[in-house]
Length: 115
Length: 111
Image 1 (tube, one colour):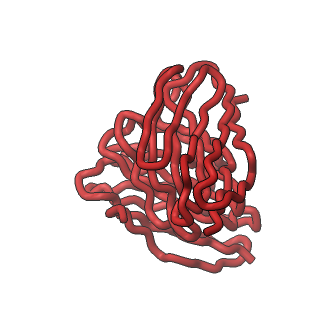
Image 2 (cartoon, rainbow over the protein chains, first blue to last red):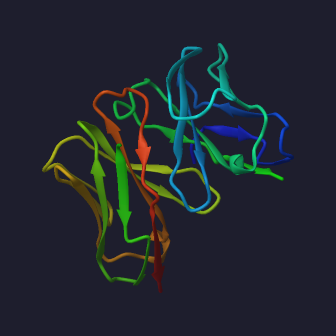
Image 3 (cartoon, chains in turn green, brown):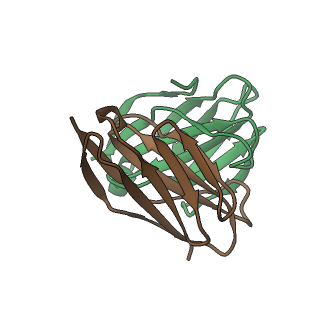
């Protein structure tokens, strides 16, 4: 079991609404990455935060935004929700931002359903 | 476009029946290839990182190998607790933060 926690566990929203998902990284980890995992698919990279700055972004529109706080916890915000945003949202923390130079530890995810 | 393809999509084995999972990738330059295990309702759990062709890593009944275009995850004498989805991911040389995942192989081991 990793020390990465996410809240809430499940969430139901309607199309057009906004949502905020939260992630607490493992102790000492200053890097958080967010992923979207649709049912039956592998995770897709959304973005990474390192020391409170965005440090890389995948092919997601600007309505997906994030924040990292001084204690290295992080938020993922999604505006104007669409049906296709229904997915498992995962965060992963690591000690350094370069994936592969340190192990990424994933949280259990937040299951978002958009109706 | 960078791609990661895993096969088969699903695999059912009898306990003790060894097999291999495949991950083929196309990237302009490979920084690293990763294997993860994911149990239902949980986040992926890191297994291995491979960096160069010819490299091999082992953990219990699992062994990962890497060539220039693909990686294999060999499972020797699997047990029911090895049942999970196994994900492969690659990181391109030019990217420090982004990794690209395949869709995974759902492995089921019957007792």
